[in-house]
Image (cartoon, rainbow, N blue to C red):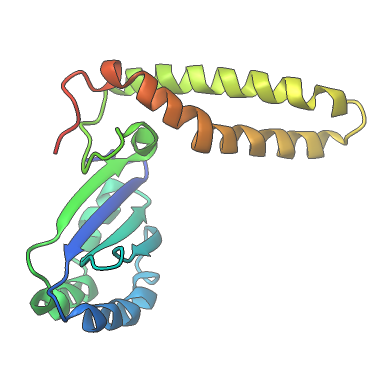
Length: 186
């Protein structure tokens, strides 16, 4: 589920009873500001269902797996779960993935079997090499006229953006057979 020394992303999916959507959203709006008080919590994103749907999503980020474990026993979180229990059709589905594994998750997978870290390192290394090379070619005409810090910040920003939105999703699909030889878990 994660490592004690790295961040973990938690995806919670809740099917809300028909007719309870408004009450559920009100409960979430009331709860959301309190989550910021929990040490180790790095952010939350709430996702509404498409029109006609009743499955709501919550994406939570924690500093470590241990912070997520402690959060689950936090009295305020326990109370929130109790408050919304009658608004749900079933128990929530909870998936947790550590660090960079979210870059390499197969499309459409609810939960992915985490590939070995050495495989993730190899695919990430390939991606970094490709993007750094491309960015260095792109920025080389400006290297002599820009201040060093500007080139450094723009270059790193382009590398991160290229990895996140272009290269790692492509490499994840390209190397899916190697990263997930048994296919994604469902």
